Every structure is written in structure tokens, then in C-alpha cells.
Amino acid sequence: MNYLFRGLFGAYALLICLAMLPVGTLMIIATPGLGNRRRMAKWLARVLLGLLGAGPRIEGLPGLPNGACVVVANHCSYLDGVLLKAVLPPRFSFVIKKEARRIPMGGFMLHRLGSEFVTRDNDHAGARDARRILRAAAEGQALGFFPEGTFMPEPGLRPFRLGAFLTAARAGLPVIPIAIHGSRRMLPSGSWLPRPGRLSVKILAAITPTGNDRDAAMLLRDQARRQILANIDEPDLAGGSETQGTNPRRELSARPDL
Image: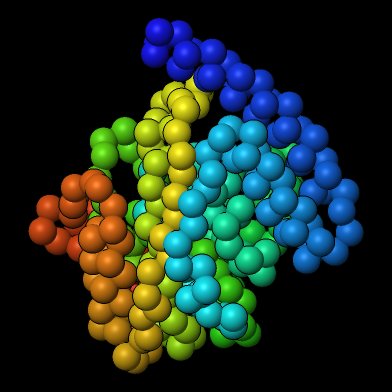
């Protein structure tokens, strides 16, 4: 019976997503004004999650700064971007890998929402992107990152890339860790059929940079990761080293990779 219910729900959820995706994309693209487009995207994200019965439950939103800041969240599923779009104020720009620009219609929609794209496979282009994002942060832009860079089928918190924290340290912005629950279970990696579930977001205490150098960025990273790890029911996959799996040369270039 549970298997049948999951199958029926998955088919229903997939139909909802397939119906909303082209309509929502066109609505966002056609809406004039960046602020209006972002508010439209937030409304559409909330409608989608509501139709899926996914919530979300939100904790700690009043603690989010009104001004510029850098939010960092654990990454478990394709639902995470939709979830943060539904929860966070429309003023946030999300830092996204440049490959997303190739998604038919979706790439243009992300561009119209003011997303910041970063190059992952070219150090020179990546450094140029990082400088652009640092300027945006210094000018007061609120930014959102998934510092794990990707998500995998295996549950657990992966090592954090340093780019988001270099951006925060050099711009003098607070880092706001966010713990996401439920998205891995609801839409596992490699699956196209969502499962019934409830999503939740916990916005944690802000962390103020102690300086603007690499050491300050590493401290921000470690503090943010510890906060997130303490608030999710998943293991630590860093293997005892926060820098495992990262490229020091790319970290120094402040590449805010996803």
C-alpha cells in the first residue's frame, strides 16, 4: 500500500512540476523589473511546495539580517534551490555553476532573476567571476551559496569550498548558515519522482568575519559548517579535514563554486 501511494504521489508531483515549469518560467521571464521577477519566483516556489504538501517549516527567519549578507546551506537535492527561493527574501542572488545557463529556457530564467554564474573548469574565468561576485557583495548584494558544490546519493555533509567565505570575509559581510531537512528524502539524487515528505529550513546564528584574509575565511567556513552539521541528521563526510576535496589554488582565487 505504501509503495502504491508513493507511486501515485510521485506521478502527481511530476505532473505538477511539468505543468508549472514552463508556465512559471515564461511568467518570470516576461515580468518587468528584477524585484518583481524575484517576488514572482518566490510566489511560484511557495505554490509548488504547497501543492506537493511539502511545507516548508521555517525556523529562525527573524534572525536574518536586513542588509547584505552571505547565506550558506547544505545541499541534498534539486529541491534545495526551490526551497531557499521560497523561504528567503527576494533580494537574494544565488551563485550557480555556469553550466546551468545551458538549460533550455531555465538558464535564461536564472539570468533574469539576477543569478551569479561561476565557471568551475577554468581558473582564469573562475577568478574573473569571483571578482565580479566580490564586487556585488561589496556593493551590498545579499548572496546565497551551496558550499558543498554538489549533492550525492550518500547522506552526509560534504567538505565546504572556501569561495563563499572568502567573499564574505573580503566584503566584511556576516555569514548565515542554513540547515535544510527533508529534501534528500523527498527527491533523492538520481530520482525524477518526488516522494511524500515535509521540508524544513532552520536559519542559524550569524557569524561575523574576524578579518578579510584567507585565515578569516577558513574560520568562517569551519564555524558555519559546524553549525549546520549540528542541526542536520546526517554524518560528517569531511574525513577529518575541512579542505578535503578542494583545490588550494582555486580557493586562493576566491572562486565561489557551487
